[in-house]
Amino acid sequence: MQSSPFLLPRPLGDLLAKLPAYPGSLLFVTALNVALSRQLSADVTQLLVGKKLRLRVTDAQWAFDFEWRGQRFVATQNTAGADLTISASAYDFVLLARRQEDPDTLFFSRRLSMEGDTELGLLVKNTIDAIELPVLDLESLKPLQVLARVRQRLVHH
Image (cartoon, rainbow, N blue to C red):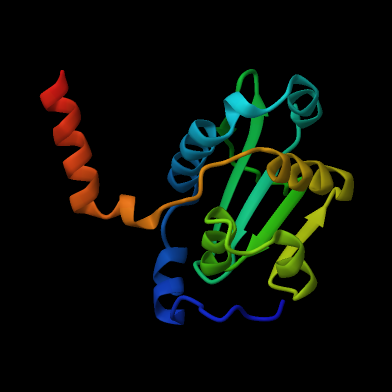
């Protein structure tokens, strides 16, 4: 895979690789459920049932394993592998989340890869493209911004 314009420094990636995978997958599916679960159509969720998915952040050496169960995504430990693995650098995933880069562009420049079930990969890509998602605003994730929102909610309750 051709490298993206920004990669995490190797020592940081090596350090992140030492973290256990499951808690990261749990945090990832929580965010995924907030962003996507209610927007997925019944025909899409039907096709996702029983499929093992993996999102691999190459420069952080992280892999988030998950699947669709019932009405939501759940974290799993895919020891036998995944039906579909989507891989890119942390920077490229942020670009995708912020809608600053098109997945096809990253794919054809070899900065995004999909391995496994091609039909499932197209389903995932087309579903995400069809959903009107809010753009990820990294400024809103700064600690002071998060604390201000929490404080505001506490005041209103």
